[in-house]
Length: 238
Image 1 (spheres, one colour):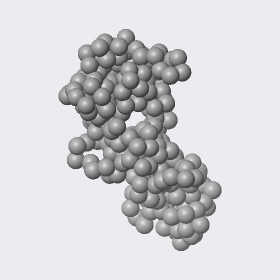
Image 2: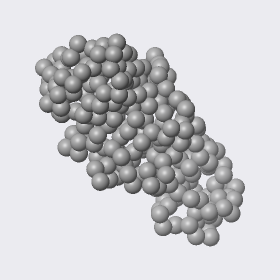
Image 3: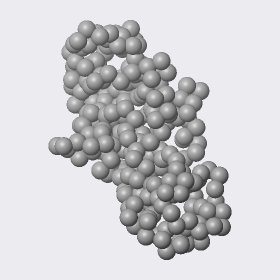
């Protein structure tokens, strides 16, 4: 990796600012000053210092967000604010992207990372990583609905969902439920309830695999995952 790209990615400024930093002799590798921005370095092996301080290199970033309603799960959008717009500049430098998507009006757990391999594992249909949602439903949710969800529901386009676990928390004109699904079709939770004649009026994701939304995070807030949480993501079925 070129030294100018590494320093820019680590938040030491724009490419132009990094070049100025290098020209001043403020950067060294293994005790030797580097001035050429094209110099290739291995941040995993070389000891790189800036202003005498050792650079702590990180390739990946893992962020847990409590997504608020009104923003879209994308890296950019011409009409609406995105979840990336909520990040601090030092986190945007890593170019994270949302793993999967939550609808614009849906709240809750959203993972953002630049680790494409982990994202693929979490989203692969073969892995069947469970995602649990809390929802308020307009209409009375019944045991018959539970049985239908356990078998799989036929959506409006003819697709039959994989079996899902529906837990009824309260039942009435507005029912409260928790639903665990292992796939992520477009508007899936909403369409599943529409298939049984009901409507989702509030939706929040609580878990992804064994990772649970931090209850201390207010909507719109985020933080880095702990090492323990990262291990839960990497082993979602254990």
